[in-house]
Image (cartoon, rainbow, N blue to C red):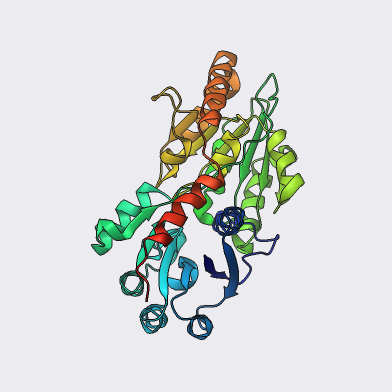
Amino acid sequence: MRVHLVGPVGLSDPARPSGGNVYDLRVAAALRARGHEVAVHETTVEDLSSLLGSLPEGAPVVIDGLVGSTSPHALARAGDRLRLVMLVHLPLGLGVAGSMPQRDPEARALAAVSAVVCTSGWTRDWLAGEYGLPSARLHVVVPGADKSPLAEGSATGERLLSVGAVTPVKGHDVLVAALASLIDLRWTWSLVGASVDADHATRLWSSLWRSGLDDRVTLAGALTGADLASAYAGADLLVLPSRHETYGIVASEALSRGIPVLATDVGGVREALGSASGTEVPGFLVPSNDPVALGAALRSWLTSPPLRTRLRSVAVERRDGLAGWDVAAASLERVLAGLSSH
């Protein structure tokens, strides 16, 4: 099968390693490993119609929602000649991080495609509830995870790591407020992620400086490959303080190394963390936008060796249950195989 995957400009840019970009590229690679030919296209909303018009009749096309969800007219024009699938990482109808919800164009765009792929059950349920999409057109293909060497972990558990773009939705400012309440304890925090919101990044650093925390914090910027792997290998705890996540692929990346996760209980994060032995979460879940709850969880982690030992054991058990990208690709393959031909 020859598949076309359409993503935003910058999809393959290593300086912009978002969870959505990682997902798109890893699924494309896994489909190729399963014997499919995959053409990856990067385009803008404005150029989507022209791109779709250039693709061969009857071709299966997977379109990232960042490009497709606000392009109902382009999808409607191409829907009769192409087999269109929308891949929704983050519903634009949510209007997160202060952006305006775009429900009307997204509803019309999703109605124009043959199938919708979501990266979590939470996203599937949200789309079904908000847009009344029939369940038969909604499919969940969760991100895969590569089994990586187990992180050794320090005796004190003091090495905290966050991975994600420096934007308000990721909640790093909430984490800074929580860390300010832990000045009496030993810890360091490394923040890995591109500064895509310069004003927010400046405010974040100013807050760190005013709180006297700047000497404990490393703003590492965007990392990929061996550098990102090294950041995970040196971490004791992944902290994901997001105001919203539809899944939280970085949680899977941490758990694939046996690193516990402290995260806000938003969107699909609970799915990403999963559980070991059917019940125990490999870390902590706290309310979003709550520095007191976040700080209390961090204090528990930093001051209780038995707790750290137990959660590391749970994280290792959870690691053994993570599915790889080949499983994600097989799920997407079934969606594509079920599309009606033109």
